Figure 1 (tube, rainbow, N blue to C red):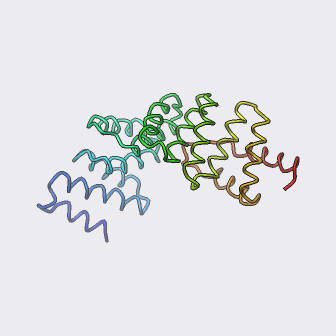
Figure 2: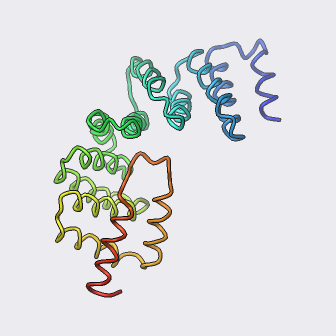
Figure 3: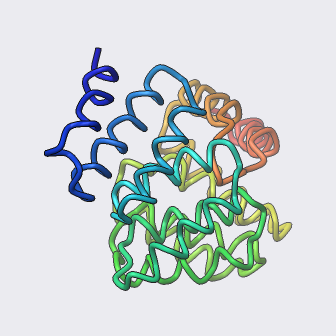
Length: 228
């Protein structure tokens, strides 16, 4: 029903103003995405940014492009968006996400740092920066950012603790791996930890890829050493 109303509205004289037309196209993008019609969603997302480049609408379009791993098209939209001037933290985080999904870790560092400078107390932003540093082998920086993310917001607490364990494992630092594994065990019930690991492991769309099976082994080893 909503789709029919939007499609009817797009032909009305009052809706030919670029901003209004771009808004309706963006609504169609979202409406088709709701019913899992990705091709139609992309069609209207593209029409929206071609009608008028407005950041929230461009971000909605880019998000759909990224789900399809259409990185070159997403990059093109980013370039047009950034050419307008002011860049928001959300757009920078999304650009970081694109580079991580595209397995271009070096390129992820610059937007991740820029996002952090604009939102130094946002846990998600700090976590992206920590991960970008970790996969570029800047482990000390990564630990600092992950630790800061823990202090910024409890919403991402569990995941950030997993990142800290992974960061130590990549360095083959058993002592620190055990330390952060024990911190996790001191913070969450064991079953909740294992359920959370399984949930994260099966999530396919995350740009942050951790070795969940190895993290699970590390936690199990810690339990074996010191008990529950």
